[in-house]
Structures are given as C-alpha cells and as structure tokens.
Amino acid sequence: MPPKAETPTAAKPAPDSRAKAAPEKPAPTGTDLYRARIKRVRSLAAAAGFDHFLVTNPKDVGYLTGFLGGDSYLLIGPRAVTIISDFRYREELEPVAPLARIHMRTGPIGDAVAELLLAAEPERCGFQGASMTVAERDGLVKRLGKGWGTKFAPDAGVLASMRIVKDAEEMKLIRRAIQIQEEALTALLPTLAPGQTELEVAARLEAEMKTRGSSAPGFQTIVAVGANAALPHYRPGKTKLAAGKVLLIDWGAIYKGYHGDMTRAFTFGPWPDRIEEIYRIVLDAQLAAAEALAPGRTTREIDSVARDYITQRGYGEFFGHGLGHGLGLDGHEDPRLSHMTAPTPLEVGQVVTVEPGVYLPGVGGVRIEDDYLITERGAVNLCTLPKDPAWAMLA
Image 1 (cartoon, helix red, strand yellow):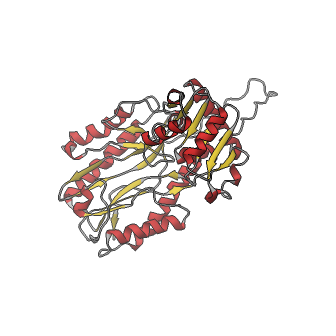
Image 2 (cartoon, helix red, strand yellow):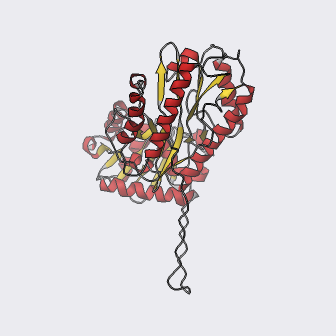
Image 3 (tube, one colour):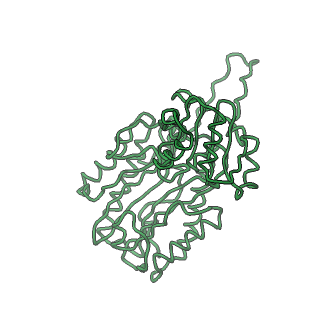
C-alpha cells in the first residue's frame, strides 16, 4: 500500500464563540531564523560544557548564517558571533553582517582562530570533531599554547542533533530541489532513445536540472544500462541505451544547499522477464517500507520491512545496502535506515529516502527511490513521479 497522505483535521468550535484563539506565531525566516539557530547552538554547547563553540563544517556555517561559500569558520561565544573568512568572500558576506562580526583574515585560518580565541579567553571551547582533522586541531592547540589541550575539545554532535529534524524553511528548499529534479527528468524522458550513451544522458539530465535552478547535481548522476545497473554506485560510461535492457537513473538536485534524491528504472519496449520480476518485488518492498514509516519506529525496523519482503521472495542476497538515509544540506546524513547501524527512533520532521534494490550480476538491477517526510500521522512522499512498470516502459 502507498504511504498515508496527511489529511487536515477538522477544527473544533471554541466553547465561547466570543473568544478568539491567539494567532499562531509565524516560523522565523531570514535573519531571525539564523539568530534562532545560533541561540540553540549556544544552548546545546553550554549543556555540553562549552562557553564557546567553533563551527568548521562549511555546510553548518551555511546552516547558521545562510553563507554557503565555504572556506570560512564561525566562532560562537556567549554574546558575540564572528565569521572568519577572507577577501574572496567580502562582498558575498555582507548579508551576514547583522548576524556576526566579519573577520577578514590575511594569513592562515588557524592563525585567525587562535587570535580570536586568545582574545576571548574562553573557559572551554568546543569544536566539530567530525570535520576538523587531528592535524588541524593539533596545529591550533600549538598556536594557542599551554593549557589549551584540555580547553579546546571535540563536541558531541551539537549541529548534527539540530540538523536531523528539518524546520519549515528547510522543507521549502528540499521540496524545491525535488521539484527541480522531477521536472528535469520529465523533460529528458521523451528525448531518450537507443544508441545514446550513459554519459550523454547523464550530462543532459544535469543540464536540465541546472537550467531549472539547481546549483549542482547532488552526486555523480548514475545512468546505468543493462548489467551496469547491477552496480549500485555505478559511474556512467560509454555503454549505449538499448531495447530489452534495463536503464537505471539515480539523480538529485541541490537547491540553495539542500538535496533531493530519486531513482527510477526504465526499459525500451517490453520488460525482460527477470527484470520485470525484480521490478515488481522492489516496488512492493518500497511501498511497504514507506507505509511503515512513522515517528517512534526505528530505522532498523523500517529497513527490515523491505529487506524481509525481498528475502522472502528469494532475492535477499542481492539487496546488500541500507534501505535509505537522511536528506538535507548533505545528500547522505542521519538518520540511516539500515541493518548495519544501531537502531534509532524516527522523529517528526526528518526527511529520509526509501530505496530498496535488487542487483543481479551480469543481468542488471532495479532500485526505486523516493524522499519521505516523517509526520505525526506517518509519512508523506515528497516525490510525485509515477513508478509503476507500465509508466517506466519507454517507447
């Protein structure tokens, strides 16, 4: 069964018709949104024992300021916020001025960070252990001097815990990324024909996404023909589209930093018998797993719904990867729907892919992937393209 769609709940009349409900406070946007996020970082960092926090992951800098140019750090103190960048981004950083003091470095970024930290004299400064290398951390501690080895410490995933649940503004951007990639594929499909190479098709699909506003593909677009489709992360080459061979396309757009990710499989003319068999199994597994999505269900539970279904039909050994992953500023982020990671409960506001697949060496493979928003009622499919076998037969 397809995943349950959200339906509005009928409003109950107020006991006193003269009383008016207080208007719902609008979600923050623009500068107010970034200020709210920075405030939450301060709170989470303080709970972890830090009075200062250094953000080094460029996507997290973007999440907190709107600046996605890269090569910049963000130092958050109890009162002041400073973005550390360089001349290349001077003009691009002007919109960030209401949020943070802009420190233009003229030397290595480590020197600038050390200068600011020595001036701030924090009791304890956290840094992003997942994005700062050991060499970078050691170099910075050496610059700072004696005593900083314990004052400068890795965090416990402060930003990751925030980003795992998407706010209303993030959802707008993810929905737009998905819309772009769907429009791009819809424009491409009528132009496909046997004889075109995988590389040619990938290039045209990426161009279609860019003309619609995608800054870049979310990953190297996968276009795989025939036996190549049995390689889950295949890189397109010179193999040509042909009748009677499966064509697998895995593609994604990025819009203002946020990702979409989808996969569909096609054929020119009738489906080859074995490929049609696994197509229907994969589709049923995907729909069953999507139907099971709900807050409180664990990531491993959802993975097992699809995995058990495929295994019961004799193809379990040919589905080796996880069922899905989170989407946001990264194309692959938490939560991970997988049998290979610790189970974690799903939460309202998370966006995950559901993408089971069956891959037969020397024959081909099928993967079907959509992006789902976890809601209080279950999940909503953010993608709209069909996926039934008849639709996927190209003329």
